[in-house]
Length: 196
Image 1: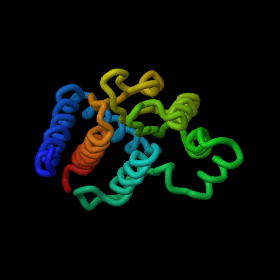
Image 2 (image 1 turned 180 degrees about the vertical axis):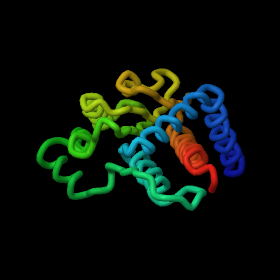
Image 3 (image 1 turned 45 degrees about the vertical axis):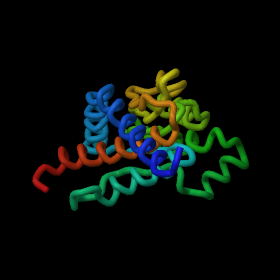
Image 4 (image 1 turned 180 degrees about the horizontal axis):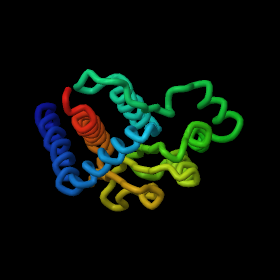
């Protein structure tokens, strides 16, 4: 396959992943946006976490809520559990890497908060343990995942809501996760700040 054909093929596949997701999960996107809105309006916060590219997504999403997405408005409470290197390395060193998010959930999470895990496979051990910790606290739990063979992986039964991208191609799952994250920001902003 020449370079131009490869680019066009990847574009087609990326668009198909987004279209397949929207056709399968439109109502669930709206539901998660409503859950986030309810959490924020009740004085709760979003605790967002994942590994690798999903860690970058967690930070990106938290920044959009805390600062702004498209509307100049008051900051909204969101925290990426992927950014404090002292905490991450202390937990990883003293206990285990699998505990890096769970211990933060136990320290920072409250019943009125929402835990949002991002895992392409739905099987990341540290994301699973964090959701178990969030469930023990009584937090609302949601996840962004991917997969055709095992949609949502082991994460699905631990969550109140899962947005699963029906693809086995990691790049296209991650591209669709960013699309979802931007949708969530826009939907929440429009509902919470209609006059803006």
